Length: 430
Figure 1 (tube, rainbow, N blue to C red):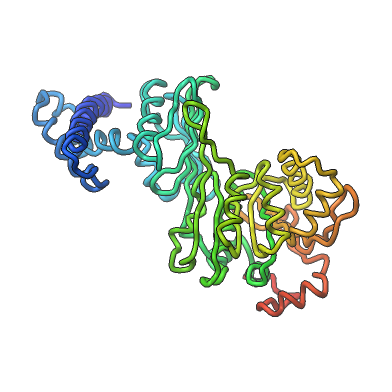
Figure 2: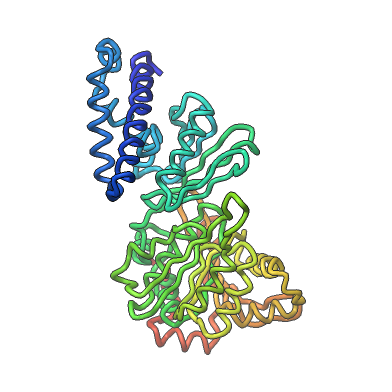
């Protein structure tokens, strides 16, 4: 970092401290006078006015050395109302993931799958902790703690990005931000980007319209949430949808014209007294009392699997979820393990009977060679003791060659054909 840039950053931090203090005083005055809290626009405008005023009171030599008054103002406001020097990374549409470890260089993941190293965003580890605490206090839907007693933080930023931070139990305080591209919201857009082809487009759309229960499996960053969002947007606007998430990532409220009758539920950690926790399993049970046509679970990873499967097998057809699994077949054993976390005491044979009656298709997605793609689809046929009987109706190999090796069952093919699926044998084109 150049001397001039270092001077500008130091000045911005100094101004930010003064802006934060003045903003806090103004909020106290408003509370005391019974006035409404400031809107985001009002906060930004006031913060910039204060920063500009404080710069006028600053030693002219410091201002001259900083080389960029507007940059100093923007940087100081970002430190108070945003995420400081992280903000330009969040504003970069080419960046999908941001990894920060203390005051070291930042690593980002780009849309094409490449990783790139960027300049540090803080000068010290303590500054990173302060930045994270400020985000928890100002940018989340509810204020969250981040300290030795609560060393992890999981929250959603105003733009829909997901922030996870950890301290004390890690060698250095660390921050990971995963950005969500809500513009990828239809199967047509995923087809355009090469995630699916024409036949998969027709198949998946027909499966949703036919109210088949679908599990989307894959690894971290493979495109599970993106595909789930696109499938949700194949649902008729006349249906009532309830979504269940650990953090609001599906963005169903962003597509209110497509889903006017919806409710979005989010889990909640316990408070400082260890009370008030609402788990995904709790939310799943709540959702079933909210008269849903379909229940969508953003990510299944625990005891919520049992009420979700019960919902799927008892009339809430067309429900969907995502989960972590390294293949379409291994998703079954993962689901069984999750059901066991609900302490139901059910033997594996009974769990598999439930699973076979609840799940119709498992879709596996991967990130290969800079591109996210559907790599396997299984149709669930039945259960056989400790095993699930399924047919892999679609798969791609490591070279990208695709095939539909096993035909759909006649009853499934007839049902999907009613909803637009032509079952074309030559449908592999774009």
